[in-house]
Picture (spheres, rainbow, N blue to C red):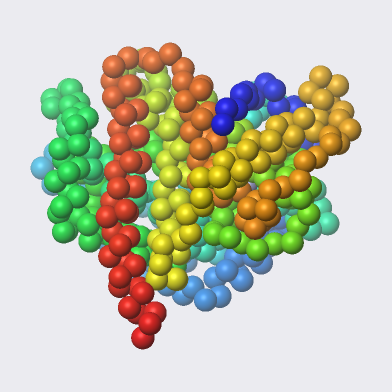
Length: 480
Ligand SMILES: [Zn+2]
């Protein structure tokens, strides 16, 4: 499959959404102003947040174990303990000793100001604002009228996200399931631990051979840790950390988190910018969802997903090269362009394994693997749906083009239904990653790019080692 697309080819349509009292805008205001009253919720005065709060209230109903900040003495003690634990990670380092605990008062102050809703998790909304702002900054270069939609998170243990309008209004909002943040971070830690990277004085040594990975693949502790991660996801539990990152990994993890989050948020923003009618029900599909949509509807939905994926991939590429490829201070953060540019591929690669793990848990068997002819039928259809979607608007006159003669959907596509499969979307963004490779900056950037690719392949191999064991265990459990 070959796809050629750049942001300039996409229609630049102004978004008629006025600037509202968006929480992310307020965060910036609050840095210069006195904080608002503690316990003040924007949902009491803002219709969009009131609507998001309603969605959150439903999602929270059966999830008492998902932590969120209430400001109680108990919450404060938990935060203090967390900061002290972070400091203990590096007891030998005098320069940073006690540096996390010292931020306690400032953090409580920040957490005590107005929040979007009663159910919003402060950490997740802060991450969303950061990623949302980065994506917004790229979109406004092409679509100056674009403004950040309202943002919120749901405590649902899937990697889904959605862009919608508040019913009866033009106000747009994007909700991301907060599992994404934990998923990206924990799997990032596991993937990174399989690559031999070490700080040696002011240099970084990267061993690109698989020597370390081959050792870890036989290490029962490491396999258990990886299996526990997938178990948390498959059983729809909160994903918890089963090991700490190596001291040096934080830089890379931070950058990767930003890339993965920006990709998911960029996909949702793309649906808004490009005025897609269907928006999301979910970002990641399961297996063989049965629907009865017409061929034309399936084609439109697949086309919109494919265009949103590529739009967002292009945005992540720009963020990677704008923010993580600089030459000012020669720190590792300036060498992460290629590393971050791979995030969209990693997202789908890892989502695929997460989907499979949930399927194995639920069915005690591996999911059906499509035959080669079905795979090419699916890819061919996705490619033509993308092509058709790109041609729905004349990019010079900005007018809709007459609908084209449409070929029918192959039976395998009808069987899959409204959402293109994750593996096909992975191939689409992988194709973009390969065909849009910029001239490399230097050796360090290339090596760090190879680290991201190795992380993806290693996690894939780890899962393929674990899967047969899971099938044995789950098929026995289900029989009983
Ligand atoms: Zn979508």
